Amino acid sequence: MSNLDKLISHFEKFPGIGGRQAKRFAFHILTLPQSTTTELAELIGSLKSTVVECASCHRFFSQTSGTTTLCSICTSGNRDHTKLMVVAADSDITAIERSGVYDGLYFVLGGTVPLLHSEDSKKLRGGSLKSTIEARIPAGLSEVILGFAVNPDGENTARFVESIIMPLLVTTHEPLTISHLGRGLSTGSELEYADPETIKNALRNRG
Ligand SMILES: [Zn+2]
Image (cartoon, rainbow, N blue to C red; front, side, top):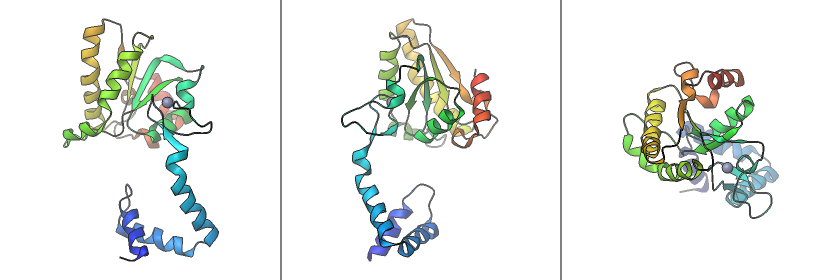
């Protein structure tokens, strides 16, 4: 296999990228100046050592000061630690932060539980979410917001998260509200692509 074919087969594994797009990417790279392709290669090569996963919320962040394990949201003194929003992916956090109306904490589940592939839930951070909520309840956590899309997969993912949280409510006897951001979104909305105004309304109307 040539280097070009190898590169194409790597691009084909990217989310949402088919064979034709993968080829276009590879041939586009061939048209770039050497300095750009070198920079690209270096960026990819160093990405995993400079961008790390937050030990608490699991979102990716740029590590600037060497040994920090927590992201700027988790360490910020301006965030409301009584609220925790569970989202499928980092891109959802980006969309919500853009709206500027949510000041609580996050937890990145790492994907969704498709209605027809419930076994996929094993790939998600269910266990870690359970221990995070368990640890945060005594620290004052009072609301868990389920930030998933309004479609069958999003609703199935919300049910999966509820199945993790419900038993905790029974054992802790603490007042913990579970709300759904999706109930304030229109049907079919993907959080990732929602505009700031839509997210603002969704947060206001969550239930
Ligand atoms: Zn974090």
